[in-house]
Length: 323
Image 1: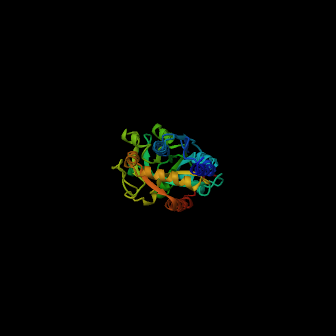
Image 2: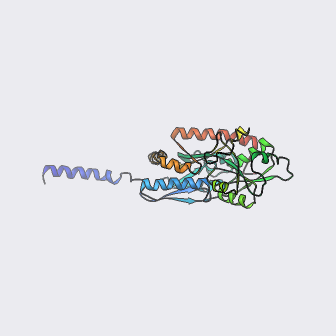
Image 3: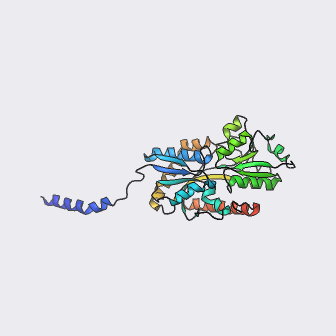
């Protein structure tokens, strides 16, 4: 054997252990993206949009799995308990990744310390709608029912989320008598709203739009600072003199707490790249959602600010998920 061949053989032999311990490419198998609510709501919609985009980018299937119940906490807890290998992620909606800790006394995980906040994806203001059972088509006719003998009912996808808080704040700010009816997801509440089992509902635009356009639901107010592009004739709560009713839903990608920094960075970088694509931004906007790309310190600051806002609402309304 020549000296050159001998040296090459020695180099390869020495590097073999390093090669065998090299970190495998991620992902090299399908990834589960958990959703804590039933199909058909905004959380599910955002999850399916981002899953489709990540599947194309990664060349591995990203599968959305709906695990509804307990105000989103079933899916969140399964994410917390999953192996921190990047193959179980959560498309989290505000309650299970932050607000629930304000209203549930006995949560089995801590949203801040037990989950890795990777990337914020989208956000949207709530929209207040009335169903066909209620003879109400605008806020003026709703407020005229302040002295009705029977309370009106409003639904939400779970106790303690923004929709629940929005209903309690609406009652407090206007004097309306409202009774909360929690559901396991937005689509279930919308179905009952159309069927006349409940009177009112707060949700983001996506699960409401087709029913509003069909005349089955009436949009009364947008709980944000500006009118929605898809609902240009619906006034904002600011216009209606209820600025404290500005409440926004937000959605992001979360993982187990011990998810390696390198893997969090990989996922975050790829999601942020998707959120920079005009076609993907339009796919969100077409559903009444706004791309909201945040990561790292900016994301943690955003969540902290949201928590501070909702702490004040909980203190004022006394909302609690438990006796």
